[in-house]
Figure: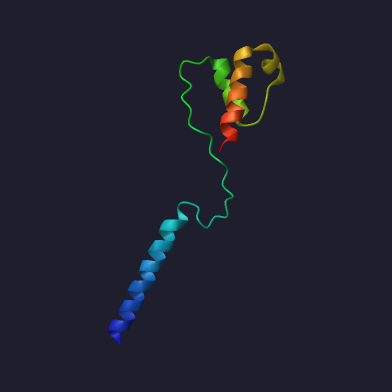
Length: 86
């Protein structure tokens, strides 16, 4: 009887460990996690472009900067497209 009890305990522990391993990746989370922004190398771009890219990815826009600064506008457009794909 002790052998059977030990086997059940081992099987239960193994199942619990397997289930815990899946929980870390959001398998049972229902998909409520916010999508991650894509990793983009923006080195070499202006600060205005980088701000536009971040704002475009977040779907927020500074209308004044969008109208007045070409780099911000291009960054916003690129960021909104890059994050839409995810």
